[in-house]
Image (cartoon, rainbow, N blue to C red; front, side):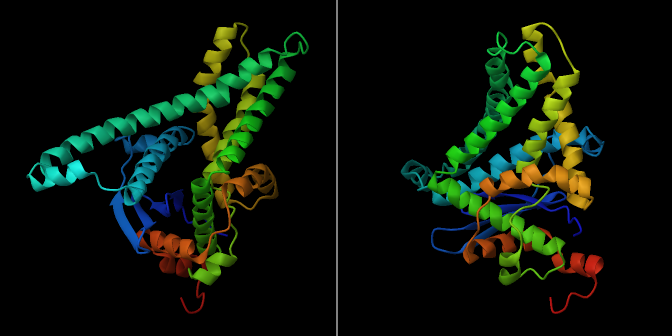
Length: 317
């Protein structure tokens, strides 16, 4: 296996694939047609060197992933929304341009608000809540070390329960199937196989560079750091958990990058818990979903040139 540095995510009835500064969203429209949109994403940080510094780049890449992810998810949802009658009337009256500008401004504000809310909710649910729950055990368990370990286990447990609950929703189940198609495409390419429906179908739906694995590393590494960094004040303990998030994200990103390009037995062992959780966040896709994933990949990545360079002659591509 050789890393291709392709990333992506599932969206509503489609897939987004990203390579370097280019990304493409492929969506299966209600009429069955596959629509592909290709664009550039430069990131929220204009100063590129910051996104290349080890242990720093993970913070910015995480934020960029959230912003682009919400942006492309919102875009894919537009194909399944009925067009508003008032917008039609405004267009007929020649007011479309003005409303388009206002709409774009509103979308940016909504996007920023959604990202901030998502981060705040994640911090509250997965970082702060487990601390307060574990604090209730203080009369029974006096050891700070053991309470910290229990807190970490609670954090992982809440994450798994959350995934199990949302996976019961029909739309989420289909999204998880597209997630599986995304992984299968990348695995197909990175194992030197021609990108065909048959080869993609036979490939694994688990991948070591998945965002699910990243989140698991964040939860696990958080336990380790909190065991070594201690403060007495309960208020400072909460503040420390929040303040350490960028550090944890930076370390987790480097571990994820290493896992994506290494077959070292120790690295593979560290990747196993994240791969196990991916069994919950990915499902086997059907061939129509695989077709969407292939088009998303081909819009941003020359897999034939990549495979020729890394694997030599792979046969009839």
